[in-house]
Length: 237
Image (cartoon, rainbow, N blue to C red):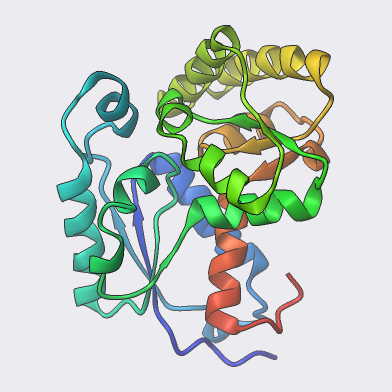
């Protein structure tokens, strides 16, 4: 039996809604809890109205930074002691807020790359939005860790982005087909696992019953990292 964490987790979600729901499910699934009262207290602010992060990076669309900042500060005002955002592309903009945040943030990119290095030290493919790819947040993070991270060709990236867009449209079956096609091309070049550097990617991957050992999920990595921060190192994570 575990004591409930003293810290409250604040989750800024809605980017997209299905990924946020899966993140919350993983928090429950991996928590070292045997009854309701042992789970962490979580405040969720799900705001799908945050401007598109990839469009802002690629096309100069509306900047999401003010929306992200307001959401994170609202969660802190509600009483959150720790923050998490289950969206990888958002981290590019959150990095510009950084030290101004009133409470610590569990960084999804750091959590995912750390997990990928443990699971596949020989390297992985980067599979995320075109915005995340262009931002370089994963490439620079991998370089700091000394971790081999391989970037798909521009042609394959188009297919990956299509799969992500289909997940957001709740067309999971079509998304799974597009993702399977893209991963086939990647593994023909280099047979390595993927880093699912978009929180929609694991949803399509799981729907396709693809091999779990061939993916490091950013959703799972973020959930595990949050639980370690909340419970300490003792949970069997």
